[in-house]
Amino acid sequence: MSERGDDIEVQGATIDDETRCEHYASERDVVAFKFACCGDWYPCRACHDESTDHATETWGSGEVDEHAVLCGACHATMSIEEYVGSEHACPECGQSFNQGCEEHWERYFGEDLARG
Ligand SMILES: [Zn+2]
Ligand SMILES: [Zn+2]
Ligand SMILES: [Zn+2]
Image (tube, rainbow, N blue to C red; front, side):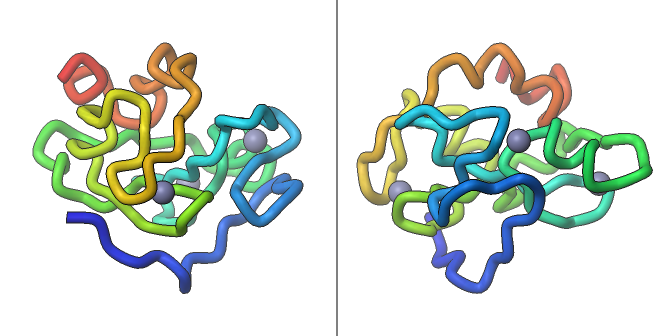
């Protein structure tokens, strides 16, 4: 189930409070991710890499239950499994997500999960 993520502080080059950033700013770019390496939240991997000096680590196949995805529209978090299986819409509020993100899932979740 989704959980409230109101306390989450999204870092990086955000441009609004729905987690859009300088790299991804379309109407549907409203998700942020928790990164396995540092446990911090960023709107995208570019934001992470510009703000840190360590290599990005992806989540492993045993971590599908990790609540590593935040919907910027309603600030609910969802597990990786829920997000990957969400048909590109927030299970909580119905906000559409950018389908193009799917091409980059392996940069966040690792290949096992991305093909899930
Ligand atoms: Zn990190
Ligand atoms: Zn970004
Ligand atoms: Zn939502």
